[in-house]
Length: 194
Image 1 (cartoon, rainbow, N blue to C red):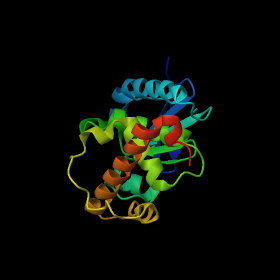
Image 2 (image 1 turned 180 degrees about the vertical axis):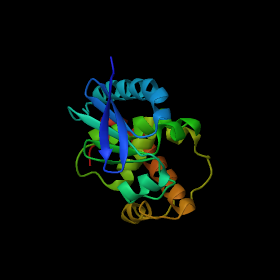
Image 3 (image 1 turned 45 degrees about the vertical axis):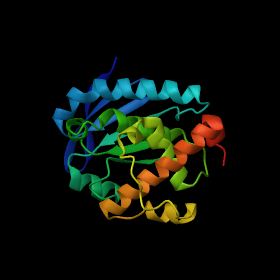
Image 4 (image 1 turned 120 degrees about the vertical axis):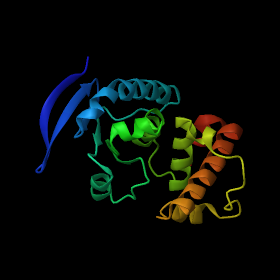
């Protein structure tokens, strides 16, 4: 059962906190509370699926939902078109209600859950491609060329740091194509080895 309490999130804003097993979710916008069940369901399924792949999320994970897109950008340094960013066992997201309204909440939680458990040292392109494959995001990608098919893996890593949304989208799609191919040819456990 999730425990809900009021805590201080930042000096300027009050935040709410919910606990669900090893997962703590902190959020500022009270509308996000209605999406906690979806977060917990997606997290539980992701943790179970990660364990089946031989991966384990950290013993304690924290999701911090920003109050708005500008706060997310200030906290993470990521552009506002990015849904979330993970550093170790801390996942920072856009508002949960904003992600839910765009139909991105479950896949975002699964994607970031993968990042908390991914093997250390795998290249960015492989980490992002596997996270998108694991989360199911890649299923919605158009089956058209990305324009990056001939780009070396190291250059694709650099492309994933682009700030232009169109360039970044193409890089994510290409990383997903390459990672999904590794999963098909090597299986998940083989794809995770670098």
